[in-house]
Structure formats: structure tokens, C-alpha cells
Amino acid sequence: MTFIDSLAAAWRQNNSLLCVGLDPDPAKFPAHLRGRDDAIFEFCAAIADATADLVCAFKPQIAYFAARRAEAQLEALIAHIHEKHPGIPVILDAKRGDIGSTAEQYAVEAFERFRADAVTINPYMGRDSVEPYLAYRDKGVILLCRTSNPGGSDLQFLDVGGEKLYERVARLVATEWNDNGQCALVVGATFPAEIARVRALVGDLPLLVPGIGAQGGDIEATVGAGKTGAGTGLMINSSRAILYAGKDEHFAAAARAAALETRDAINRFR
Image 1 (cartoon, rainbow, N blue to C red):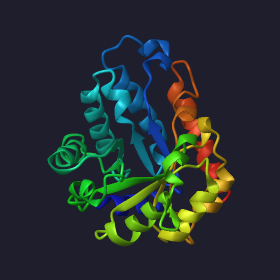
Image 2 (cartoon, rainbow, N blue to C red):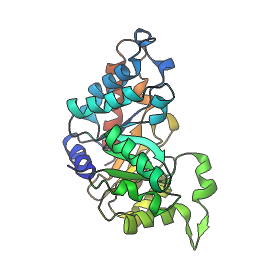
Image 3 (cartoon, one colour):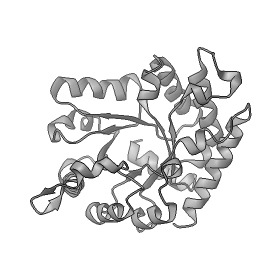
């Protein structure tokens, strides 16, 4: 099953547009996990097990693992999700961006080493920097478009031939780069007007939307701006607000409660 097929099935089966971001910070872990060699895996696996029936995807951020020499735990985590929760796609949030043989190696890293179902990519070196990922036809390629950080406007709002740069990216991805039907875009929840503009440009192309929860994005505005006619089309990411909802040995149950609340809040506006 392709990434897009798995995503559509998870939208339907779990009645969910929620993506849980797995950004493990050991300084915020419950006391009983601190100091354990496998703490990152155990923390993230417990979150995944507690929330898998409430989400449309999981999104581990590679920097949180690599900074602590925990890439092996990331491999184990993705394998765990695939084994225990088949059908829930895993997006490797890596934001890679390079050309030629280097891009080919990054694609091998994402799809063969870590066995992610999709990866986030920086498109600003052009199509040839994206093609090595597109060669994996069953995988998702999620390209940065309108990011949730305030500084994104420094470049993404530049005029390029009568349209903004983020609009050019959206149009290129939807009309010229998506030959295999495997692409999606990142559009931040902090900019609902731009979500609506991207949706108008790309039709039903899936959008990964960070920025709700700790970053303050408005759920109602996000869903209203980004949902498709079928009431899907979104992977609305929440990380810290779910991961660290609890601070003791019951952290996974607290994460589940936060995820359930978030999923249901999203669904109220679908």
C-alpha cells in the first residue's frame, strides 16, 4: 500500500486528521525513564501505543534522535509502529534538501534505513533535488511550502513573476512534480489564509499542518481553510501538547487523553 493510500485509510478508519509528532526531549521525560539507555524508544513507543487508534500518522523528528545518538532507537521505533500498528503511516521529519548523489543517499536513509513511509523535503534547490525521493513511488514526499515560523515570510512571500514564492512551490508540486501522485505540502496552522490559498491551488493534495497546540494555531481556522470537499486532506500535527501532557508514570494515558481531545476538536469543524 502506498503512503497516500495508507493515509486515506487512516483518515477513514480512525476518523482522524491528527498527526502526533514524536519529538522526544529526555529532560521532559518522567523520572522513571531518565537515565535509561532505551528511554527515547520507550517513551515514544508508549505514546504511539496509547494514541495509534486516534491518529492518521506519526511524525518523528530526526534531530531529536540524532542529537542524542539515538538513531538506532528511531529505527526501532518505526519498526515498532509498523509491527504493532500496521496501516498508520510514519513521516520522517528530516527536511532534507540537496542534489545528485547526496540526495540519493538521503532517500536511502529515509526509506531504506529508517523505513519511513514519507519524508519532509526542502524544495528550494529545485526538482532535481526532489527526484531521488520521487523514485520511491510508494513513499510520500512532503515538501515545505508555507512554514509555521514567522521568519518563513522572509523568503516565502517574495514575488516571483506575479505570485508569491510559496504559491509557486504549491503550483509546481501539484502540477509538475506529482507525476506519481505521492506528494504533499507543509503549510503552517499559524497562517490560515495561506492554507486556504494553497488548498485553492492544489486541489485535494494532502497538507501536513504543524502549528496547533504549543505553537498556538487555531484549530477551527485551520480545518476550515484546509479541508477538502470530503472533509479530509489534512495531517494536523501536534507534538509537545500531547507528548508532555503528563509528567509521571501515567504519561501515556495523559497523552491519549490529550490526543483524543485534539482529534475530537478537529472533527467538530470537519
